[in-house]
Amino acid sequence: MKPILKGILWAVIGFTGGAGLLTLVRLALGMSLWDLEPAISVGYIFGLTGWLLGVGVWDYWARAWFGLPLKKFEANGLSRYFSFNLDHKVIGLQYLAVFFFMLLTGGLFAMLMRLELMRPGREFMDPAVYNQIMSLHGIFMIAVAVAVIIGSFGNYIVPLMIGADDMAFPRLNALSFWLTPLVPLLLLSSLFFGGWDSGWTAYAPLSVTNRTGQLFYNLAFMTLGLSSIVGAVNFLTTVLTKRAPGLTWGRLPIFVWSIIATAILSLLATNFIFVVLLLATLERIAGMAFFNPAGGGNPILYQHLFWFYSHPAVYVMALPGLGVVLEVIAHFSRKPLFAYKWAVAGFLGITALSFTVWAHHMFTTGMPESRTAFMFTTELISIPTGFIFLSALGTIWQGRLRLNTPMLFGLAVIVNFLIGGITGIFLADVPTDIQLQDTFWVVAHFHYTIVSTQIFGLVAAIYYWLPKFTGRMYSERLGKIHFWWMFVTFNTTFLPMFWLGLNGMNRRVAQYPAPLGDVNMWVSLNAFLLGASFAFFVVLIALAWVRGPRAVSNPWAARTLEWQTASPPPHDNFPREPKVVGAPYDYGVPDSTHAIVPAADSGND
Image 1 (tube, helix red, strand yellow):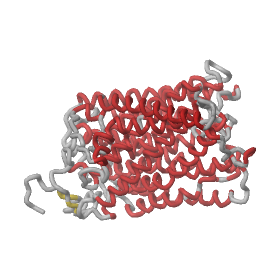
Image 2 (cartoon, one colour; image 1 turned 45 degrees about the vertical axis):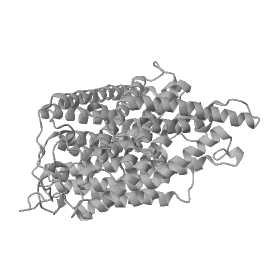
Image 3 (cartoon, helix red, strand yellow; image 1 turned 90 degrees about the vertical axis):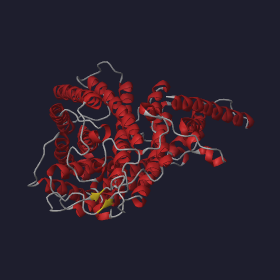
Image 4 (tube, helix red, strand yellow; image 1 turned 180 degrees about the horizontal axis):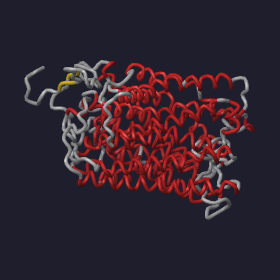
């Protein structure tokens, strides 16, 4: 905990210094001595710098810039998870802890929303408070969906899968993680400054004129974006430069391909959300008028910039989960991944086309001259998505299925994602989207698209790679109970929302017509059961981590490289550099081997 306390101290010193410096500048310019939002904004820049230097950037990186010796890493055991650690495996678990906390927190906000929505009319929550809770739920879950799999499993598993000893830039990797704890801190701190009620999209002009809590949203989202950009550079460089000998592009595990596609999207698209939130912040604190029509601005510009990032971000959320699903299904079907090259083409095709569909979120803003074009590209992107879906189905077909818990969650993704895809067709077409775009149909579709891939995929990944993390196994019986509990209650919660949307229930508001009360009561009760399944999951995993039976190094008899080393892996991952000699999924192919890992004392080259 010492680095964290040091980081907090440096952050306080930096924030105070930055806010004080701004005060002196304002005084020198003859302006009023104090203005809250500019002071918070400038102070945060200095405070963020102080936080990063305090938690370890100075001791383990920046000292060398000035010719000073770097400190040696001394953290062991649990203390290494609270330090600026360069081991990609530690960083992966650090990411998982932070974003799982955000997942549970966002889920609690959802429970509060469903408590209010159990009956028509005001129950216990003021409509403005409801909108604040709704906004926090949305951004917490978006942050989780954007980063949890690529941050945790991307960091932990990708270097192992490609036979590397670590990420290409270990210090940059640690830096990208230590940006993320500030995200939930800023979002929760917004409540002390009035919160905000503009939803996770934070459209201007409301987000420009909103309470000071809105500024904390801007700072949190920009911080998350910076972390994503830095992490994307690291992932792409790692896969490009640190693959084991023989690991050609055609031999990469499919999960690695999903991380490549996600990193490309993060690198190219995240700049736009950073810019639009920076412009909104400048409009708040410096009186600029990017989105204010009275000053020559255009509020629709905000939506264009926002969705130019946020629709690619939908695939930043979905692709890692789909990569997990294909990985799990291939191993538990005991047959080669069907249409491997087409699945890779699907990931890359989605990456390219995702930049052409953003305005289907804006059909109701006008722009009649371009609606047809965006409707066409939105339908077109279903083709590479279909490649991935058909690859999963083809792999299952006539496979020797092992219905362990990870496989069950992988199959659930296929079922749920199919529902999300079918219902998305109605939102891709202009006439039906105009009728459905602000209703609970969109809420249901979004959850079937993102929760089915990202959250069900996350749970599948945790069950699948838990033995690799911990060296221990979970209870298969309890895992299957958790699966059926979560799968059934997810569908009984969100399927009725399509009906609610068709019958006039608007999203993002606490009030709805009285005839919809019974269905909302049903949805809320099932949502509480769904939330309880996550509590069961946390207890199950905690017990497995502490008291589970010891796992063998390769409990699934899988072929990919992460299972060819000890569980948990040693510091450098492998005793010697692996050599890849075949495809990763050639189950049933005689004399087929994916990789050879020489023993530590082997003299073979």
